[in-house]
Length: 490
Image (tube, rainbow, N blue to C red):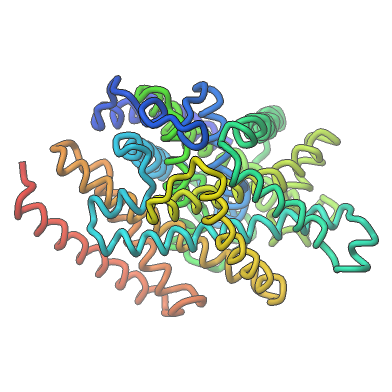
């Protein structure tokens, strides 16, 4: 528990000290924001700061800081280091600069920002990459909550006539369409703060129980992978841990979400609490769940799953871990919050993912979104494609696992492009670019090594994957150094 408490203090300190430093590097001022200069009553709306924070937090969180932390805890105490260091120096910097760059560029989406600083080809690549990633998010976050709800209850007549889970899939899909089409303050602005509060309350409840119970769990100094009985995964810490825990440390998906709130930010000075602060809050949630999972997987003298009914079967199933722990520690209230965590969170991530896809496509086609007709013209083909992807996922027994594995890698690869975009911006503005260059190089290594290592891609031996990752970093350093010497050196 000492490792957990130190990590918690580090995250809070990171917000107040390093977050302030990053804000100073960027130079946030008092200039008008797009929410004021481009107000349209649909996507560009100045929202109250507390509401903007809550929406941003739920937009970027979803089930990522819960499921990712649970699966990442299988790697042992190394998860603590990645959540803390990744969040402070990587994820929060990534989210802050992406959000503030969007503010400075009139609420621009990620592909536009990438195109401005990395070139037209990179912009086209990011357009396709981002929309496909967002479609995967929408697809994954329809079926998984529908399955959970369907296992609890669904009308017998729909099961008999059209099959299992179709009732909930249809309801979630209808909600997606409504939330994607309507102005941001009509649905998202009203229900998101409630769900965000519930997600935070669940984490705080678990934090209190952790402090009261003070379980005996592995500490960092006992060895990053020296856990009782050995680690529950045979995958190497590097690069797999850094892909498994994404949303609690650094996530490229956030770069597709931050522009939504960049269009609702009343003033630039709110950038640090809303963008950097929301990521630190997500890191705290991930840290709590990683600690809870350490207790579940590796608690001493015996791991918790050994004395929980159904615990042994839940080791490989993150939603089941959430349900078991919340029910044991927090009773009926915990069960309700667990359902909200594993159902409401992914649904609310899915709708903003598709909203982001609409905005990206509309910006690319230069199609204004004030009229419902134009929103429909973009949304109908988008939802048709997501529905087709959903049918494939349901029809293929391993469809979910395949989409999720590629989502994990795509997620972090998107972060690489965002960090490089921010680096080029800081160089051109003659500001401290090391704050993004170092995490950009590190994540370049992670994503390349994982692509080479994972059986879902090239399936190479781990030492070859390491070498390939190092080669990618070396190539990136050569490219950056050459570009920098040509015209952007002090």
